[in-house]
Length: 159
Image 1 (cartoon, rainbow, N blue to C red):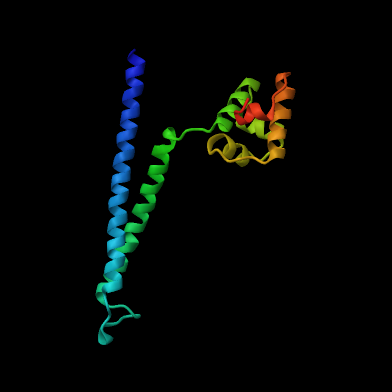
Image 2: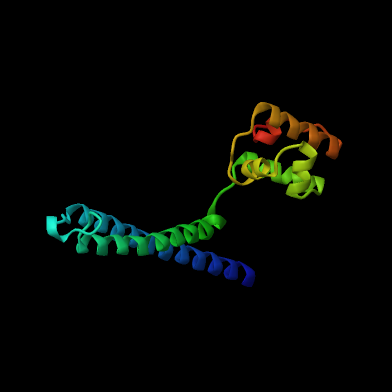
C-alpha cells in the first residue's frame, strides 16, 4: 500500500509540474504575442530612425530576443515532463512486449529486423505506422526467435 501511495504522489507531483510549466509557457507566449503587436503598432518617425527602426521598436525587438530562448526552454521542459503520460499504441506495446520476450534491447531488435533504430523507436514510442513490409519483418523476426508463429495481426493488436 505504501508503494502505491508513493507512486500516486509522484504522479501528482509530475502532473503539477507539467501544469506549472504549461502555465508559464502560455504566459510567455502571450507576452511574446503582445510584444509583436506593439512592434507592429510602433511606427518610426522619419528623423528618429536607426537602421529603419526607432528606439521603441528596437527596445521591443530586444525584449522579443530575450523571450524566445525562454519559450524554447519551456517547450523542451513541457516535452520532457509530459513524456511519462504519453500512452503507447497497441502496436508499440506489442512490439515492446515481443522484444522483451525475445530478451532483446531496442538496438538488438533494430539489428535483428535490419531496421533503423530511429524507426523502431518511432514504432514503439510514438505510434508511427510501419509499412506492410516492415510489419512482415517484425513478424518473421519474432517468429524465428520465439519459435512460434507471430502474425502481423498480433503485432498490430488485432489478434
